[in-house]
Image (cartoon, rainbow, N blue to C red; front, side, top):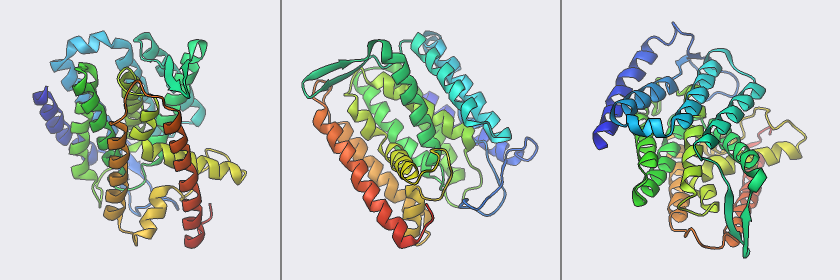
Amino acid sequence: MYYAFATVFVVSLVTIWLIRKYADVFALIDVPNERSIHHTLTPRGAGIAFYVSVMLVLSFFFFDVLLTYIWTYLAIFFIFLMGIWDDVKDSSPKMKFVIIIMSTILLSLDGIIIEELGTFFFIDISLYLFALPFTIFVVSGFTNALNLIDGLDGLAASISVVILSAFFYIGYSHHDVFMMILSGSFIATLCAFLLYNWHPASIFMGDSGSLLLGFIISVLGIKALAYIPAVSILYLGAIPILDTLVVMIRRKRAGRSFFSADACHMHHLFKEYFKENTQKTVFFLVAIQCMYSLFALQLNKEMDQGFLLIVFVLNIYFLYVFFEKMIAKQKRDC
């Protein structure tokens, strides 16, 4: 298995280099705007290398597992295509949502669906007819949440490595080969990518990378529900989830669209707090994600999750208040 991960790393290094070299030929160039952290034309689309490297190597080493989860890998393929289209042409939110719905339905054909949430305040919650709609809500929410934190060199990749490492540990602990190879392969390709993407980045992952990663983490999160309590998924993906929820609440209270863009995400706020030091900002947010993930891994599958949900909601409230004060101090228009 670890030979496969090493192979993914090497193939990714070469593939990302090729994409960076020929990015202008395929219109894979990121043009900075008023919200961009960078100020020069930069190649994007490294997500293409993520998919190609992982799927090529898994097809060679673990073809039997791919056949077992054929609908899941087809769903991943559709998300990948959507990401490429977004990098080249900029797809609409409606188109993204339709593709995510279709892909989530494909996941359900492999049994990757949220059918129950566990026990909350002594009540067992099963979703029954709401299982598929709730799964679509969760997958679309997190897929876009990871896309939203892709705003600093190395941030989305580093946060993803932490989250994927937690899922690899869960898979390893419960002898789940599917979870191990999927999480381990993407950890390997992200480690290769970080050699190019660490500040100052020479290439970005693009939507082909961030949407793909968000979907992969969603798949692993649903699969992990067989071994861990549902609320622990909120902690395992804490930074993308908390950032998205706080931003959405702020936009709703301001009477703006959920899909409107701004420079008021937590990485923007902390980057100014750390005097525009990108590396310090990324290290800080990764450390926070590590703490949340380590906490989540201590939780027991059979425990009552009511109190844990309250604690997470309190996290949202306190972060919202804290960030509002940071926004006021930094005099941002949010």
